[in-house]
Length: 310
Image (cartoon, rainbow, N blue to C red):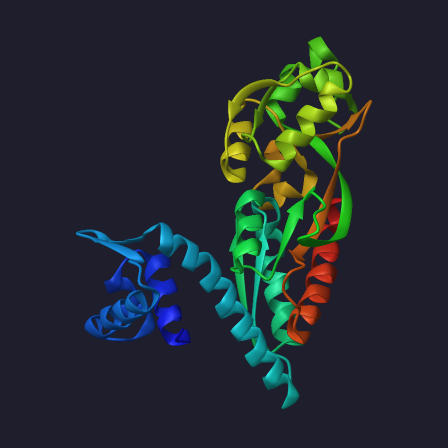
C-alpha cells in the first residue's frame, strides 16, 4: 500500500471533499482523484462515495480511515526517532485539553513548549472527554488532559491533581437567598444535600462532572434538580451569571470569564466531590523522546496554572 495514497485518502475522508483536500495537500484535484482511485483498485473496494456536496467514506472507507490514521501516526513517530538520532527533539505533538482548562493553560503551555521544544510542532485540540478518548484511540491525539478517566489496559494515566468541585452561583442570586437560607457571600461551605435542592445547570451525560455529581448525590440518597442541560462551559457560566441556575465545577473554570466578580464560590461538604485531573495517552503506541518531554511540560504547566485557584 502506497503511503502517499493512504495520506491522500485520509485527508479527503477527514475533510469530506476532494476540493478541500487538494487545497490542503497542494495537489491538483484530478491527480488526487487518480491516486485515490488507484488505491481503491488495489484494495478492490470503493472507499469513498462521491456526492454533489463532497465525498463520504463507505463502510470499507471508515475501516481504512481508522487504520490509516494509526499507520500514518506510526510513520511520523519513526521519522521523528530517526531525526532524533541526528540530534535535537523534533516532530509533532498533539495534545487534547478540556474546555474548563483550555483558556487557562493554552498560552503558558505554548510558551513552555516553544522554550523547551523549539524544533517540535504543537497541536492543541479542545474537546470533551469522549471525543478526546476517540482521538487517542485512532491516533489523532498523542495525549490528552481528562477528568476521572477510567483505567484501561489501552490507556496510560497519570494523575496531575485531585481537586474539589465547588458550587458556582450568580452573586446577586446568592445574596437574594441569604435571608431565607442564611447563605453567606464569603465562600462558606454548603452541604451536598442542600446543593441537590438548588436548580443546577449541568452538562449532559456522559460528561465526567455530570456523572461525578450524580454518583456522589446517590450516596446520600439525593439526586440533582436539573434546571438545564448545557454542553458548553462558557454557555453554562453565562447562564449562571444570568441567574438561571447554579453550576458544580472546579473553581478555576472562572478563568474562562472576563469578570469573575459576578460569581460566588462555595465549598461543598458532607461529602466533598473530588475530581481527578489526569494526563492520558494510548498504551498501544510507543512514545517518542519529544512526546516524553512534552508530557513533563504538560505536567508542570497544568500544576502551576491551577495553583492560584486551589
